[in-house]
Image (cartoon, rainbow, N blue to C red):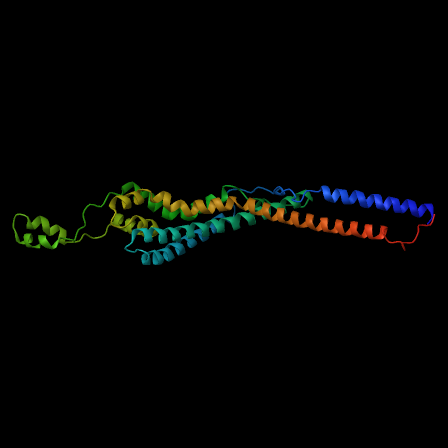
Length: 296
C-alpha cells in the first residue's frame, strides 16, 4: 500500500470515528418543534360575503332548532337525571357543530390571507375585495350575531316583559265543579273555565321555549322558578351558538399553524433520512478497497 493510500485510510477511519461519536451524543428524543406560523393579510370584520354567511348561519340555526325540537320532545322523560344527561348531550353536540363550522371558515380565511401575502411580496396586484374576505378576529362573532339577530330581538323583548306563570286559565280542579252553581262564587270561578286566547307574548313564549327546548327539558316544565330563570336568560342562551361559531373561527389560525408545523416536521424528517443515506454511502465508499485512486 502506498503512503497516499495509508493517509486516505487513516482519514476515513478518523471521519468514521467522529461521525460515530456524534451519533452517540445525539439525544434520543428530539425537541418538540415550535408552531410554525406564516404571515397573512388581515381582512375586515364586514366583507361582501358576511351577509351571505349570516343567512347560512340563520338557516343552519333554524334546521338545528327543528331537529332539536323533534329530538328533545322525545327526551322529555320522567327521570330528571336522565333528561338532563340526554338534553345536555344534544346541547353539547349543537355547540360542537357550530364550533367546527367556525373553525373551518376561519382556516379558509387565514389561507386566503397567506396567499395574498405571498402575492404582495411578489409585487402582484391585489384588490380590496380580496383583502376584506381574509381573516379578522371579529368576523366570526359578527356573522354569528347577524345570523342570530331575528331570534335575539324576540328573546330580548320576551326577557324584558316575561312574568312568572302563576295560574292556568281553563284548568279548574274537579272538586271545585260543584261551586260553579253557587251564586256568590260561581261567577268568579267561571273565569277559569274559559281559556284565554293567545296574545303576542304567549306567541313569544312558545317561540322562545321551542328555541330553548334542551334547557326547558333540563330544568323541567313543572319547575316554574327554573323556567322563569331560563326565560330571563333567553337572550344569552340564544347567543351560545354564535359564541361557539366565533370562538371556532378564532381557532382557524391554530389549525393553519398545525398544518404548517406538520409540513415542516415532514420535510425535516425527510432531510434527516437523506443525510443519513448520504453519510452511509460516504462511509461505504471509504471502506471499499477497490475504490479507484485519484490521479494527480
